Picture 1 (cartoon, helix red, strand yellow):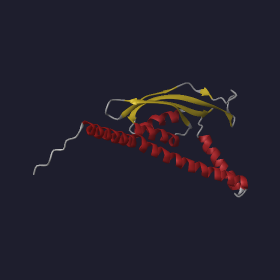
Picture 2: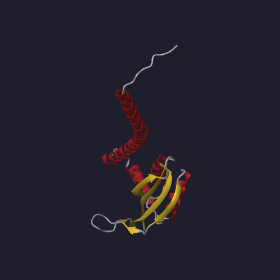
Picture 3: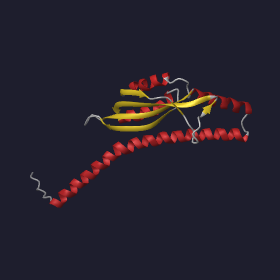
Picture 4: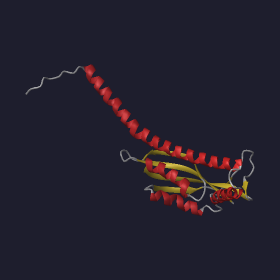
Length: 194
């Protein structure tokens, strides 16, 4: 059975090509932007719920609906948690930063701690907590990994490290064409009480 040949005009070919290109761009957007963003939004929602629960706990304490002894115990636990997050020495955290990366299939190219610097408030005065001076240690780290591993690693550090850490800078570029990995330079601040 011979089917009749369908003649397509040049305009119709252009419309088909443009439609395919738009569909391809939409799929790329969906896979590379929407899915990672939706995961990040879910994480932020979870953090918001946790923060709101903490605020409710504080409001209950202030309104007097909670037992005073219980409130003091909760505040002491919170203070202990915060004091543990400001260690006096940075060695343990410096060991954990590359260890966690390797466990998450991230190749650590370099890890360079800077000079410990005293933390100053907005008026330029030293920040003193419990008679100890707050300081921070700048760290520069270069890694090679998949982008999704890098995002997971940065969120994991917050929970695992025994110190507060903040990401100051992040620079990511493709490692090699078509392998999907990025080479990233990350600037951290590791906070300490000395």
